[in-house]
Length: 472
Image (cartoon, rainbow, N blue to C red; front, side):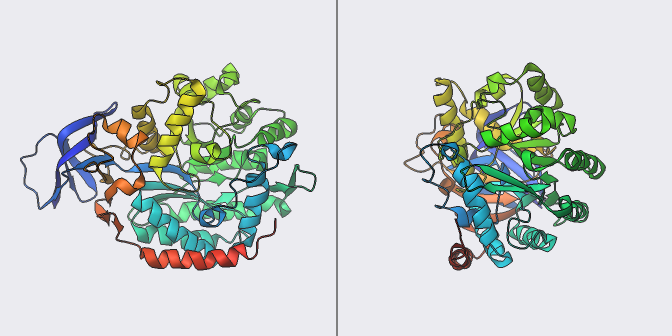
């Protein structure tokens, strides 16, 4: 049953880059795109009029957290200490607020949070998401059944997801002196690791292959070398990707140097993590000063030649006073990059805007982080990081993951350059229709697969329960 999308401005993939096709048409049958071009003369069963719309590939949001994001809103921001170690931009949020919020959570609150977050993701055009779950620090004591229930919730929404339950050797937090403590889990939490591996093995490919899995060691400073080596071994065996949090803070970087006598990149090299199936989430502090240009030549070569992807999360850093220095530098060095939203807002348009503008400020250049390059990170960059040439593109053979963006509004008109509009002016509110795997899950800006008012009510109720338990 072929479906024709006509009369829109199509962002088509030509094999090397996205290009504007105006007017253009897209034809898909089942869950696969079968034709992209200027006109189509074949038979179709359904026609969708895309007048006044950009027709774009769905975003690949390659790093986010569903289960605590609604409960951290407002608690992590506009807080900090004016001096001392806790003056670092990430100290209060990462080492004090997050552990407290996650400890105060419970399974039902996590389910409510996930559903509400998924409604926002669908509404704003993320068709593929990478959900990174949590370890013992979040309510439930590491019970893999929580991850399984969240995977079911995701599957029921119609979104495409890579689920990565987290595991690690030790946890951290803020100590009484304004520093950071690390404490090992009993037995190195090996049971949690084994449960995560089994989840990845048994859940990969469910929901008509919309749900896939990945291995997700928590943070580079919380994982010992053997755990990371075992992660690589199982990833190779299961043929699934890996993502780790690294480059989040100067504390993390100095901790790895102190305990492993290596830089972050050298530690990844030693444990065999680097590769085309490996994603570094954050990638801000990959050198002492956080400047990509000061990484050693062998580190740059290792990231580039292994085709490792750095997934940037610029908004969460920028609103805490930090910047990635920089996306343009990574680009010029030939290191693969993608984008994710991390927590809130779960809107890839906001993330693209922040990525572009922050980079221009850092580089003091209007031609840094060009809009077309940033859009590439949000689509093809994430798809390639997952080993999915069938995602993030509008081309024959790709999955029918398609988003309509309104350009018949005063904000948009006239659209001289669709890439500049999407990156520098649009928001998730401009999304009109979202198709995932050939099925429409958002129409006229309304999510069809989630009772959104009920989801909002449930997460509001859960938030009062979680916030009532907070102990900073």
